[in-house]
Length: 167
Image (cartoon, rainbow, N blue to C red; front, side, top):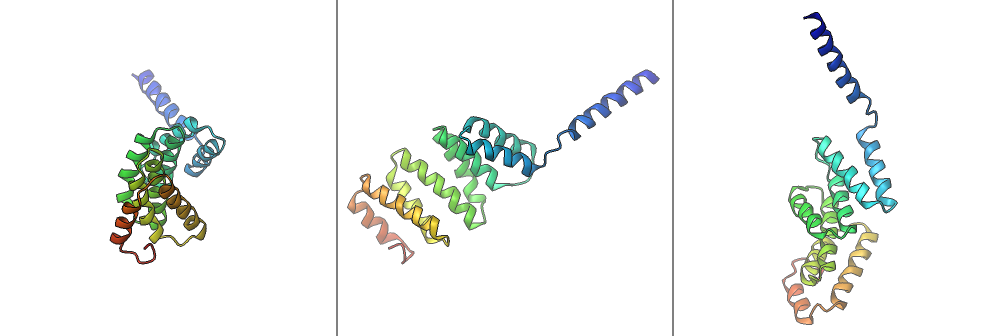
């Protein structure tokens, strides 16, 4: 009986110790995943971001957006857009929402859905305060138009646009 208790105690101690050996913090693991992404190792980065999301119960939109980016760069557009479509309604912060919607719009543009991309770029444009992002969105809007968005469609969308600055 004593041997069983000792064995259970050793097993429990081993499990606890193995969980504590993982000394990297959430941010340390996030930075490793980000570094993998920046090196172009998108599959590895995808796995690392997914593990972070699975291990942690906190809501981190940055990690989810980065997971979507890794899928985008691997041309896994459907999974990436699925993540973003689920994420966008949960985002209260405008900056996160803009970056998520920007990636979603890029996916639409890549898949040839110019109208959807154009509509989303206009939504993003009205809430931007960063001049660099503003310039990037304008370039993408021009790209939508130059890729064959019809003049009538542009006029219809702009006529329905509530934001005067976007008109």
